[in-house]
Image (cartoon, rainbow, N blue to C red; front, side, top):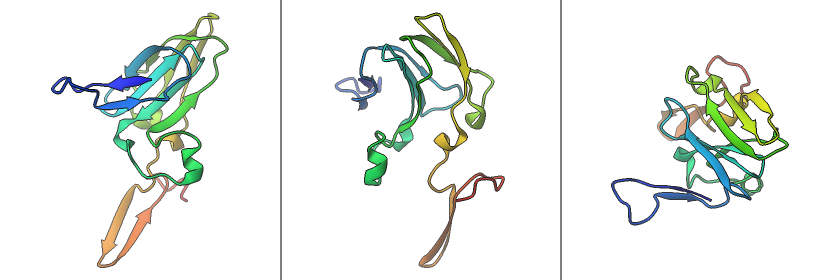
Length: 144
């Protein structure tokens, strides 16, 4: 698993990603410019991306089968253990791009789907008891 520590309170981890990977974690990095987006690579050949702002968020039972709410994306393209990866330092949240290398000497340049980072509701408008939620992209594409 992966433990997240708050250096101001070192008695215990602030959060544990207990089932982050099935094998040893080999690399762990924060997304540039993102306070809550963290990725981890492992000898299980996977890179997982987490949004820690979603820790403890409610999930439907069918969503829980895919992992905890903070798990936003899993890259499973490597055939060997992941040795390292890095984020594109010029990327913003909707154009995140990563480069990863594995023990079989494969270099992959890839990008998570935009929907992996879409919130359930981008904004909410309230009028008394009624409210309207907007789902989809800000530019109007992929409205659900």
